[in-house]
Structures are given as structure tokens and as C-alpha cells.
Image 1 (cartoon, rainbow, N blue to C red):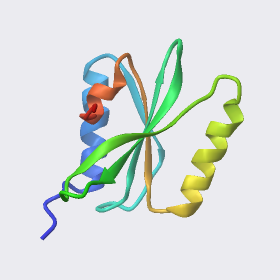
Image 2 (cartoon, rainbow, N blue to C red):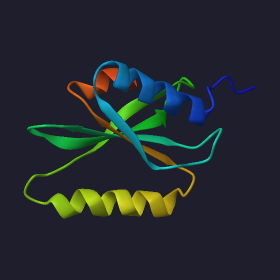
Image 3 (cartoon, helix red, strand yellow):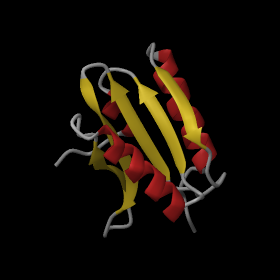
Image 4 (cartoon, rainbow, N blue to C red):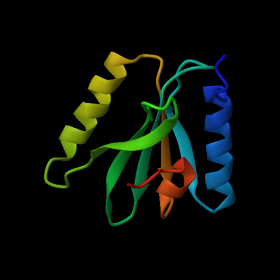
Length: 111
């Protein structure tokens, strides 16, 4: 049995958490309601955009991992990556978070 929270509920919770801290969060791409992959696009003034994706681990857990960082010299490359990713998985959610230290909302595990 899968004990994961449905994707739409997790997205709603992240949006509310970001907004309660004075940030902005918006759904850029709406995915499969219950089991869609979630990508978090993190924007912050003065920093390159970062993209985190929930990735399955060998132990069965699913944690957010950094999958792409925008190169300020090549901004189109980041956009193209998002486009390719959407073509690979039409059921994925993309949620943009615009707030300082956005990684805290993804419960990112740093190694």
C-alpha cells in the first residue's frame, strides 16, 4: 500500500506554507491529481533558479533532490530542460516558489 500524500494535497500544503511566510507560490503545470511527480522551481532574487524533483531512493523513501540549476550565462538552457521534462512526464506538477531560502519548503535533505 502506498502511504504517500496525494500530489494535489501536497501542492496545496506547500503553497499555503509559502504564502504564510510572505512568499509567492504558483502552479506552472498541473499534473496527475494523486500520484503526479512534483517538481519545485525555486526562484530568489539574486540567485539562479533551482529545480528540485522528488526522487525515489533505494530505501523506498522519496526525497527532493536538486536536478538543475540555471546558468546565468545560458538562461534558455534551463527553459529547454523544463520543456523536455514536461514532454517526458505529462503527469508532473511544476510549482514555482518565490521566497528566500525556498529549499526549507521542500524538506530537502542535504548530504
